[in-house]
Image 1 (cartoon, rainbow, N blue to C red):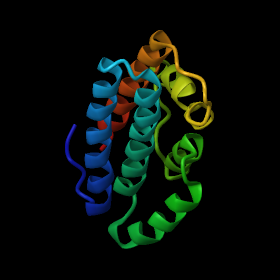
Image 2: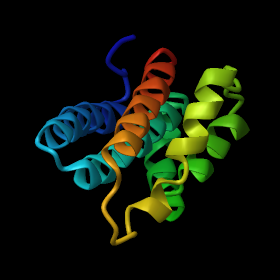
Image 3: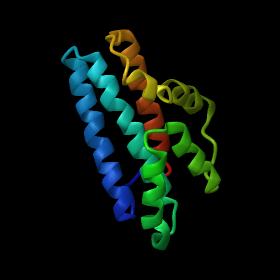
Image 4: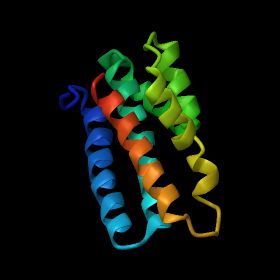
Length: 136
């Protein structure tokens, strides 16, 4: 674990840390839907940091444009990491990512997220976070 060397990756990484804390605050304040909404960004930000950190410095600005095109697609961000030669995650992370990867459909669903489901989601985000953090 460490702070990324890339200035671009470092910005995404620091934002991910802040959103992670804020999502936990929302969860503790009995706001599970907001917690899930915000926690999904943690994974997005971490995957963007990972892709930037694994890209040569002279190619990172161009990659930022590509990241904008990928947008909120967690699967797209993970696929980009694989295309750059990144290793596949272990089974526990793959299971967690399966839950977190559905974030884009969850965040626009108007119904309240069940607190038990929200807690499971936040735990999955933490699992993915730790895996990505170990690769930065």
